[in-house]
Length: 375
Image (cartoon, rainbow, N blue to C red; front, side, top):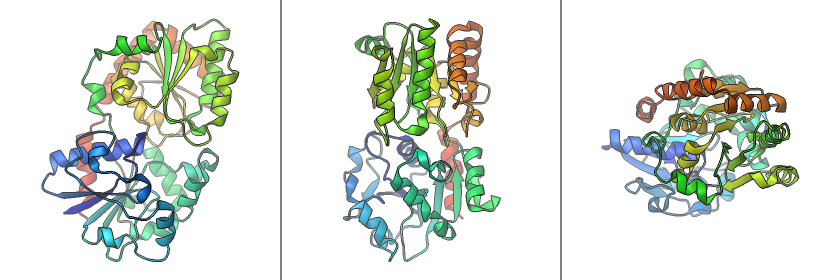
């Protein structure tokens, strides 16, 4: 088979969908090497580079095609004709990420992964362009052979929005990169933390800086911990600036403890894994997550987790986290307090986190996903 995957998200800075594409394809190259693979950039020229220039290595054997048209224009042209057929005329399978779909003359097997439905449920959390992209997705559904959701939560949300029959969609959970599981303690941890001035306890959070990550309430909860003298360490925020980050930046400036809140921007996994290992607590209090890679990354690195009780996170984390109402700053504060100071609970969370990881495997994800290419 010749299989095309949407490679639009394999770009800097890496996000969850880019990581999904990378790790899935690396498993395919290992488990199913006799098939042909193509990365196709639906976004067009905006991200024009070869596979050797991807943020991570290991995809160099894969062919890459990029339409020589700007992505915004390509989207409009797809409404009028099969503009992608010139590049994808001989493929057997196209695997994309909702809501983006090529326009083709022939009918390959089309598999679509639903990572989340945030633009439909909470349009205020996303950019206008994301809302527009999803607005026309309903009429594309007949062209899709199989839908894959990252979690039961996402599956249920998607089915409610589109009245999809259950047999059309399957849940295939993701997993954590081996980089986070192969080292008990990265040798450079002390060096990295020292270079950042992290010589004591700190609360860590990871994710793109955008409204749904709920960083304003996390900062407020941290401020309260400091004001009540329940914590004297730092808050470390790792993530590239995303859509509508202005309110977050304002909250940073206004915090009475702003000198102890470090926003490090995007970090490569090699540095990130060290921060996970050194953190006192990992906080992940998003308002909505389709899956949530950082949850599993924290489990792998042995750090106690305080997570949101919303969307997919309780499903993914099981009993290995303290769950809090993400809309309640006091609840977030209390959860952090327990995770920081209850030593018995901390030990329990770390043990359960490592056990929880056994539920997830990229090899299993790849094998389950590949089955749906052979419909």
